Length: 214
Image 1 (tube, rainbow, N blue to C red):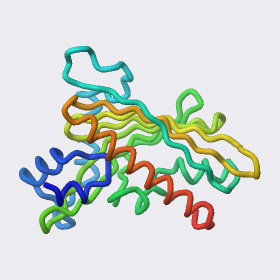
Image 2 (image 1 turned 120 degrees about the horizontal axis):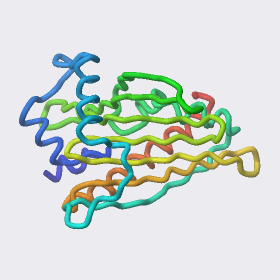
Image 3 (image 1 turned 90 degrees about the vertical axis):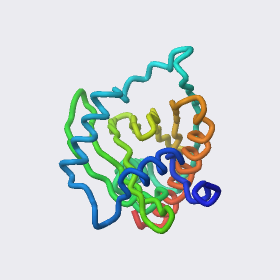
Image 4 (image 1 turned 45 degrees about the vertical axis):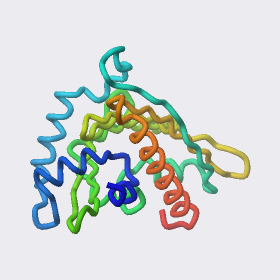
């Protein structure tokens, strides 16, 4: 278990890894099709309504924690926003993120909607376990902000609002406002690992943008 905890830097839980590993270990040879993953996204959407920001009810056994992280990037806001809001640029920079499957992209009320599933490949006891986070992203280009709501096993929900602000010296300040909902027994682990994962991604995106890689 200690070995597994050290491996997990993404906002997923040991329980999710254990359940997935024991039921159907995934590898490159057993990759699911995009259509199968899209069906799983739709099931999560229909079952958990993960864009609902209503706080957990008292006595539900679930808890909510809100926090935020901020980074300054030495680049113009237009460049930072375009690179940072593109979820595909997070591949290889977010912990264990290997693939993003986009199910639908459309515009409504001035916002760009992206329905997608992020797939992390996590080493576990000599194999690779693929874990999925089903998400909807809503990008507001006029406001330089976007929101993302996610659901992953075991019933972990996040609500994220990322805002971009011009600051002195031609730099851009990026603030991620993060909300985590999970079972009360797991919430501390969810928050600790979720924040660490987002901080890692922030640092990697900052480096890539400032170096001109993005």
